[in-house]
Image (tube, rainbow, N blue to C red; front, side, top):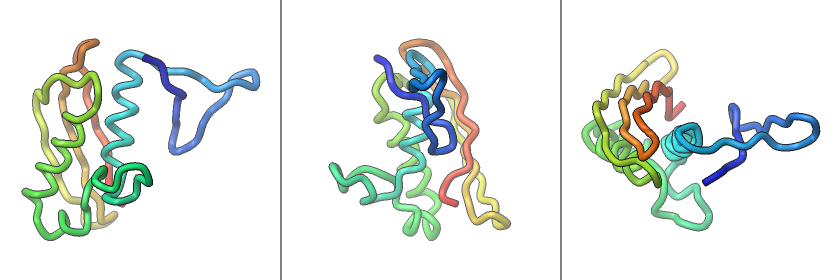
Length: 114
């Protein structure tokens, strides 16, 4: 599989062309995108995304939802570890996770829901 590289919601270019990612970097990009998709935001599938509004009131629901989004990414085979902490200053969640993929292991360290 191959995808276009996204960097902070931008599509960087090199010599007038998009930069492509594949393998473990593509899976990591898909996980980050899944964690930053708000519930009902995706036009083609209103069931996709994380319900942060409800999750702010129910941390267990939010943790389950985040794990579900990660495991739903094509190429992800297992979660090795997972933790979430809430940062009141930025009103967002820090997610740390070790993930097993078909290409090997990767780590996610993302701030979401901001």
